[in-house]
Length: 323
Image (spheres, rainbow, N blue to C red):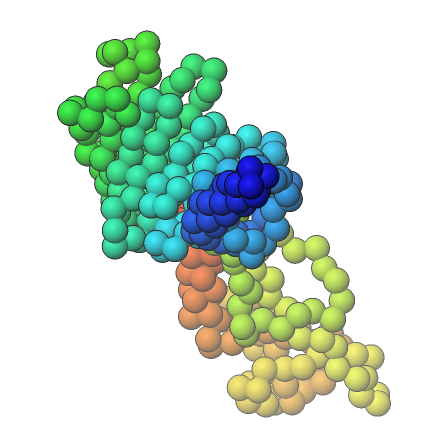
């Protein structure tokens, strides 16, 4: 009888444990992209390599190796980009940043939160980059779009709303660990923060791709042409005519004459009378001046270098430029 009760007790314990683990094992996110090597620690303590389309369960932890980047979406329409050296733990409607850096892009209809060892960020929409340094226990929140609410994890009475283009720092050695007053971020600092998220952000120093003119056909023979140089191609020689040494094509608008005259210092030759060394002035097409203006304007537009920003960063960049 005693043995039966012991076995029953063990069975009930195992069943309850499995039931609790099944509750914990509820999927809450899915991996979208992996560049490098990353691992997940499941709620049951198992460790496995992460690959695209893997499901992330509640209370699972992600470990991202140096030089690796991963992206995942939760079930609340929020995207998380993690850089190398990041360690996070996922809960339902919240995420714990234990180490490293993550870029959060939220479009949720329910309140979400992110915590560090000393900071708490509450958000619904918008974008922000959160960083936590384990060595100094320093948290930093930089808002790229929208706004978020930042507090100390132990003292939520003092709350700052950080708008886009601003950042705040929570340092245990400064102001008793309270969030610093939000400060405007500079373009250099923003570029430095986004540089680590290569798969998520477009480089801000990249110029627009240039295209060649549709009316310019490729040359049959290779030529060394400098960028921005306009080359005018002269007419080629025509086949020789019997009785003449050489012949050049004359403009179609020249009317044949039987007299030879001169006008000013330059000699003008009219066709109709044989000369030993005829001199012909080639004229430019009537549309040359207009074509030069069109090509020059096109080249000016192509030579303009303007940084390219993603749609999410356009408003922030314009705001920082006018600051």
